[in-house]
Length: 297
Image (tube, rainbow, N blue to C red; front, side, top):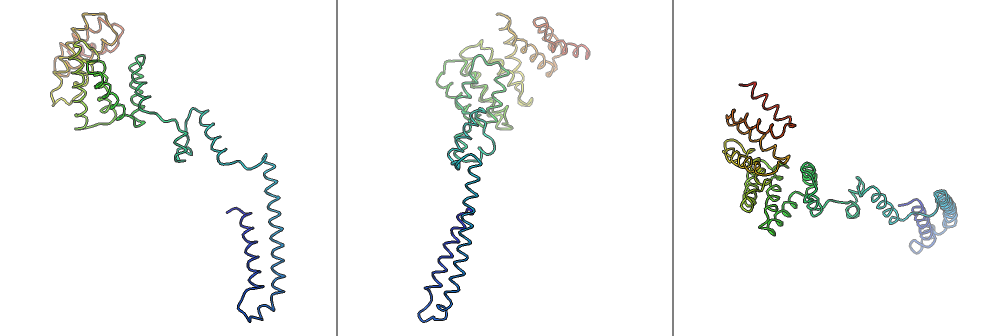
């Protein structure tokens, strides 16, 4: 309750008490009525003091309002000012806005799954930028919604190998962003099946075969997925030799050489890295692996 309101309540209380003193009490209470004049004088004195206090408070409040530039600013005006400030900063709501309930939610510019999906499917987006966006959207809690959108895209385009490949990559994001143990196995199997659907539609789909092979190579060794990963990479080496050289092809030689080494095929590993270096002489990783292999012989 504000000071001025408190004072007004006290004034009313004093008046009420004075009325009771003058006219209240039971019939025949002559002693109380005889003392009324003196008590009334005291009440009048208190009332005068309160009136002076009210007047002083009123003047003080008026002075403050004048010095601050006018009348009291309404809550709606304050809210509007906050919204304008947040809009000027790109919609970034601070702690106050975040805790202001529905109003804060209307001010904050939140990511939505459809916008995130549009960003991820931009053909001009580089692999590294796409990876970063996946991580950003996963942290924003959009991962499940995005996977659902990729599932819908694949379902709506059953004969499009790119849509099936994109779905496989979306499933792998569940693993990259936290799925572990049996859950990771579930998503890994779903991704593998999506890549298989893409390859059934286009046997030369490099993205589907390469991602499938790399995914299989990361399964625990006791599950026996490495031979299948190697077979897919060997197929890619053959297919890559039939067309124009692309920068991403270097990874096929590098990873296949690594898998050969992991399975004890050291000579084949060295030969694969040397083949990769011949095609991509600027890639330092080939030179590093070749030097290590030669030192171990």
